[in-house]
Image 1 (tube, rainbow, N blue to C red):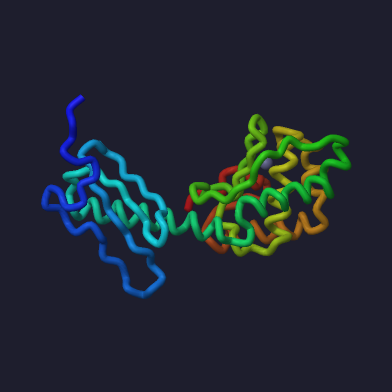
Image 2: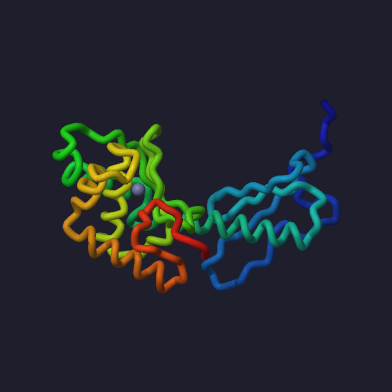
Length: 212
Ligand SMILES: [Zn+2]
């Protein structure tokens, strides 16, 4: 293997400065860019103390680099905001367990195989999804800020998929266990309509919400 002159070349290749310009409003973290000759195509970013460290392949077009760095930093900040939210993944999972114990497990007579619930930002066409094989539930972060009874209803729907994979009659009976289930369905349909997403009234929470 050839020895690279430097793996992380902060000043190298006459590129732009290592610290990207950000609005100086005090809320933005410091951004440190490290250019690596070994890195080929992809950028990556992580939090390091008060800074966000972005690893960048050396020799990128400065404008492209700046755009991609900014996008990645935004992603890190969004993830941090989600984790700081009172409904972060730990609390969200605990909340789902409480709902399962209260509404579903007594009817089913056994514990659900729930492992983790977390918010995701890459689900813009479905409210939520469930992977029964792993016991994971993903909740679209479009619902951050929705009333808790609406989120609870969506959680219960996904928890029921740990029992029934389909939307058959048995599933429906279980999934409507929450006292405000119908109201919550109405809220979600109203939100979809107001935001220009089609809803035919029969579609389910984890079916496609229609085009954006
Ligand atoms: Zn479903």
